Image (cartoon, rainbow, N blue to C red):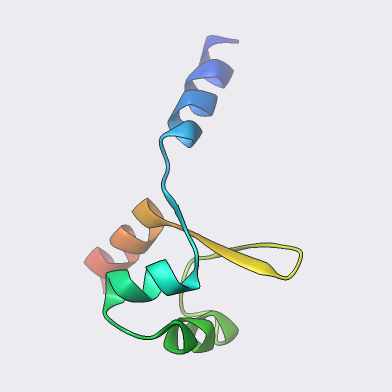
Length: 65
């Protein structure tokens, strides 16, 4: 139970970005972000037709590149 609560709290601290905000993080347009998503080059999450990015995942991607 405690582990489940800890995970929920950690998820609440995550910063969720849209394509435009992700583009600002990378210094590119949102269209460049969409292209990277289409090529499966960026970590992302889809809910319906919307695409979301977790900032910590993008920062980790940048650090590993």
